[in-house]
Each structure stands twice: as C-alpha cells, then as structure tokens.
Image (cartoon, rainbow over all chains, first blue to last red; front, top):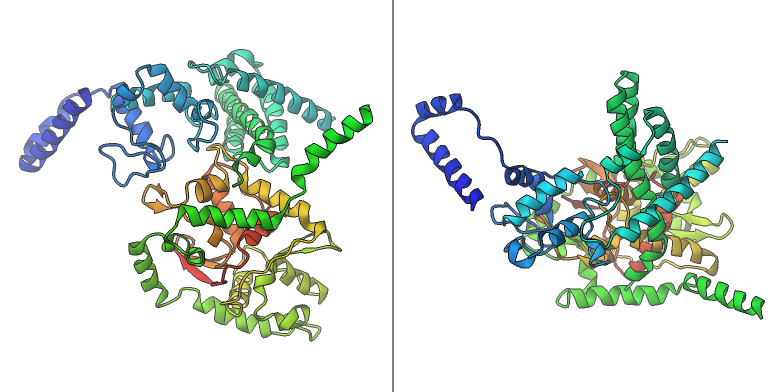
Length: 125
Length: 118
Length: 272
C-alpha cells in the first residue's frame, strides 16, 4: 500500500518534471525522501549483484523477469507466518532439498540485515 | 606444520558445518552470521586471516573454492597493509564465513549429487 | 563374520562407482525427450536456439556471415605448417587429423587420464619439439576450429574403457555437484531447469552442449573452447573457475561428451 503511494508520488513528480522543468529545480531543494525499509529491500532484490530475485521470479514492476521460481505475488497470503518467508530466503533447501534457490543467508550472499530488508520488501508484494 | 594446521582447521570447519546443518530447519535460522562470528573470533585480523586461508585452500583442493572468499581475503590483506585493523577484521570474518560454507558445501555435495542423476 | 559384513559394507558403498555409462546416457536422453516432447534430440545441438523460434531466427541471420570463418581459415594454414623437424600435426592423428573430433575426448590407458583434442594437439607439439600452445589463446582456437569444421556432420562416438570409468564418474559427479556461493550444479540449470527463463535467457539442454566447440561467443568477442565456457559457468554461480584442461574439466568434458554420443557435430558455431 505504502509502495503504491510512493510510486504514484514518484510518477507524479516525473510527469510534473517533464511538464514544468522549473518545478524540478524547486523540488531539488526540498529534503530528500528517506527510503523506507521496503525501498531498501527492493533495491537489494533488484540488484543483479545482490538479491537478483528477478533472474528467476516475476515481480509486478520488473522488466523481463525469469520464470524458474514462482511469481512473487500475494506473499502475505502465501506466507501467513513472516518467519517462514524469511527462512525460505535464508536457506530454501531447509524446506525442499531439490530447490535451486540460492541460500542467501546460509551462504552469506546477503548479510542478516539485508535479508531482513528483502523480507520487508517481498512481504509487501 | 602448515599441513597440520590446515588439516586441523578442516576438521574444525566440518564440525562447525555440522552444527550449521543441525539448525537449518529452524524457522528463525541459527546459522553462522557475521555478528556471531564477530563475537566468537579472536580480535586479531592476522589470526583470523591465517585460519581462513587454510580453510580456503582446503576448499580449493576440492575444486570448491568460492570467489567471495578470495575477494574478501584480498580486501582484508589490503586493509591490513593500510593499517585499518577494524576493516581487515571484518573482511577476514566475511572470508571465514564463506570459506566455512564452501567446505560444508563440498562435504555435503560429495554424496548429495547422486540424488540428481535422472 | 565381521569380515564378511565389512566386505559387504565396502561393496555396497563402492557399488555406485561401478557406473554404466550407456544406461546413464539413455536415461539422460530420455529426460530431455520427456522435457521437450516436440523437439527431437538432434535439434538440441543448437542449444537455446532450438527452444525459441524468435531467438533462432536472429541467430540464423548472424550465421549468414559466420564470425568463426576466419578462425577456420587461419586454422587450416596453421595445421598444414610444418614443425621445425619437418613433421606436422597430421602425423599425430588418425586420418591425418581430419574428421576425427567425434572421438575426443578419449581415455588414454597408458597415461591413465582423459585426453581432449586440445591436449592431443599440445602433446603432438611436444613430441615434435615445439612449445605447447596457450589453451586460452587464439592459435589453439583457430586450430580446433579447423579440426571441428572438418568433423561437421559426424556423430560423437566416445568410449569408456573399464580403466576410464573413474574419470567418467568424476566428471559425472562434477556435473551434478552444486558449487559456488549461489549453490548451483551444471544440472540445476541445464537439466532440472532446462527450457526455463533466467531473466530473458532461455536455459539450454546439456544434451547439445558438446557438439559445437570451439564457439565464437559475441560476449567474448573471440572464439573459445568448451573449458572457457565451463569457467564462465562456474564463475556465474560464484565458484572459482578451474584452469582450462585441468583434470577436473577434462573429466567433466569426458562425461558430458559421452552424454552427447550420437549427436551430430556442428562446430565451430556462434552464440550470443
């Protein structure tokens, strides 16, 4: 919900900056919006050298996502317990030994706090 | 002497990795993290780095070394040269974690691969 | 009694090592036939281009001006050039070395190791007093491109003598073992997930992976051998690549090429 709102705001700002270039200069003087944990998690998830989730998962606003893993939608319905989602990202093999999902926590691909941020983001989808 | 140390470290790592495996089913994961390694390890980056290199060489001998380990070892060495002990220690700890995980992987995979043959 | 039990245990542990390559190959082929029921096995020699019509058409357009053509021409000249002692490569190979790639790699019983075509070329050079070529270099790429070109249309006929079983088995283990920080086996992508999309890339089947080397890869901007691709794959999953022509990679090539037995050679080729 939050993300939708911030998206609308960003789009509005983009459209406004195209229509009214002067207002962009004004906007630049305003203090920067502090990124939420969801924003931070999103950028880790989208980063090819970090989470790189889109290599395998469909995400609603992703360009050319892969399809090796299930689409990341309705995550709260699929994971009523947030800790189960976190465990899945930490080491998916603990639930399914045949999974090809990289063990992001177990293999230190992401740090503990990065995993938490990614969980925040994925849980918002 | 170096061989003995490296063998010893290998066993230590295997033991550590066993603990890691035992905990892997918990929902709140209990595997090795940087924070835990930080709390458990010696303060000296040189000591951590020495042990880590022998773990890394053990993984390399099994053709199972990770890029992340050699990258962090290089970062640690550079920081040591520059006299930044805190940065060296953090990089050495990161290298140690991946070196342990790569050896655990090599150990597990020496049998697990059979389950994937069609 | 205890000895008997111990023997039984040892036997049952070593049993999986008594591999049956032909049974493996049939199961391997069967896997891809059932994964891709509408694609005949031979089509997989074109890799991902066998699986996606749009990508295939783009690729066929590129092949109108094959980027490996110069390598084949250069390789032909190199191949014919005499060594300082007056001999040449032709003296080292059956049929003068033309149209023989389908028999490589093979297990050399005397040396007790897998010999790839690249290694055979360097052994030939050493035998005639020449310095070995760099496995990653252009000259080796050109020579093997020419030899592959003369072997086009032949079908792989790799054999595994009893002495070669452990090398074959080591290669098989490498293929199915997860490695690297990302924890992927060769088989994770090219067997278990073959046909799936990794972002916009389609994952090719391993049953065509041995047929088309060396390959001009646009990403590399040069022609390179199968081991260069092994290194790239290993590094993509966060594992350190091994040296080209290292024993582990030669064993992997041995297994992989055996799995490609019966497939038609179509090298050199181009890939994105």
